[in-house]
Amino acid sequence: MHQSPQKESAGIDPVMLEVIQSALVYAAEEAGIALRNAAYSHNIKERMDHSCALFDPEGRLLAQAEHIPVHLGSLPWGVKNVLRETAASGLQWEPGDAVMVNDPYVAGTHLNDVMLIKPVFYRRGLIGFSVNRAHHVDVGGKVVGSISPDARSLDDEGVIVPPVRIARRDRMDEKALFPFLSRVRTPEFSKGDLKAQLAAAAVGEHRLVELAEHYGPETLRSVFSRIISSGRERMIRRLALFPSGSFTAEDCLEDVNGEGTLTWIRVVVEKRGEALHVDFSGTEAQIPTPFNAVFGVALSATYFAVKSVLDPEGPMNEGVLEPVRVFAPSGCLVNPVKPAPVAGGNLETSQRIADTVLRALARALPDRVPAAPHGCMNNVSAGGYDPERRRNWAFYETIGGGAGARPGADGVDGIHTNMTNTMNTPIEAIEQGYPVLFERYELREGSGGRGRWRGGEGIIRAWKFLGPSAQVTVIGDRHRVPPWGLKGGEGGRPGVFSLRKADGPLVPLKSKQTIILRKGDTLIVETPGGGGYGDPLGQESASRGSLSNDGVQ
Image 1 (cartoon, rainbow, N blue to C red):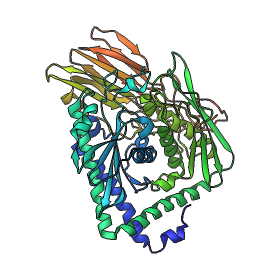
Image 2 (image 1 turned 45 degrees about the vertical axis):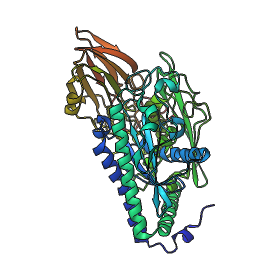
Image 3 (image 1 turned 30 degrees about the vertical axis):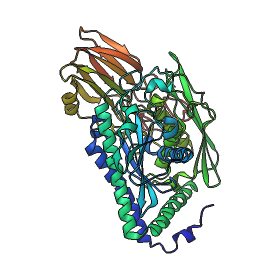
Image 4 (image 1 turned 90 degrees about the vertical axis):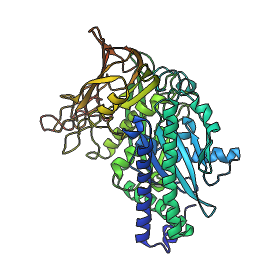
């Protein structure tokens, strides 16, 4: 049972509360800076494909940095799973420990996202956990980059690491890491990125200890409880404005379960008392390909959509999440049963879950939801053997697109949206580190949907391969069904992947495909534009129910 706010707040100076809450947020941000600066891979160092957060001793989220939504929303679920598993195994947390896990059915995303948990002690008492997650470019599996569009089980996607202690007394345990590092394609990068994660966790630990030293552990625990209760109270106040009724929506993924098919995510959103219930019972069953999304991803996408609409400026902690109740039947696309493959579910299905929940919210709260963004991460994984450097190489990036238009403003051009919040990988860094030469990097003019306010433009990104051969995987979506507009706005232009062979012909690629590049071949990625908002002629449209028009069913 929760304590009353009056009892929790007794003796807590509101100024002190705000100072500690802000200090926790910045500690997570500072940990992220350390992780970025110490990382080996371009994916983390340049794209900042990582996330950091702080938790209390019970595994409740206290604060997070403004990092990757699909990472952050699943961290509370993942941390609690790890605490349960370590308790069941008899692991006793000690100062200087660090536990690593990437099993998606425990940690909450996909195998490439390695989660690291470090306990924080003050005078031998546990006062919290410093946690981070980082996308490792390769974790083994059947393709370079470990994200295969045709994996049939989790084992096809790479090395599965259950919660394992990889550091004792702040020293990395090489023996514990061997089963992981011996099976990845670029172990020097993976080991370097793990060291960066340990350094980042140590920064979060140091800042928590400083707070305990300054305020005392008992005061700190009281403040932690008040931070969480304040977040819960704030979200309940926001939900008081939510209208009564059931609001439904559906949206689809393309070609994830057979050629030419659409696979549907369906949701019902309804306020019940002080809670918002989000039910995915109508969603299709899990599939044999890697576009299932573990439940942690469903939570992440739902939390992102709800908070973005109801309280975008408010703090993020465990209390904010508690009034949002998410249900997905076991065995469905957004809550699969292990060992179903899930790599693409974290990337593409997460985006579609967010789109679907936002469509339902657009019915409940019109004028507060933008049209659909490009709706995919436009993933490119590449790698092989570099004879000049005499080493294996692996490269991964996601590419932005157009944001959806919103009331009063056009969509933003060429940006990452919704479940990804990564940076652009600079062309100079890629060309310096890998055998590629960029030919184009520009906005895709005319790709944003028309409307009273137009959708944002997508991106064209093309590079020529300079080495002898490389394996490349592209995974995207919205290549057939365009990002939807709202209020009569038109859908954005769908994406296109293609390959220009060295001998001249242009070959269209599927939205999800693994290919071999030869010297002189050029990969071309054209990302979708965002949907438009409002009738292009300036009048509100009366039509409803179309994927490419109104966006609400």
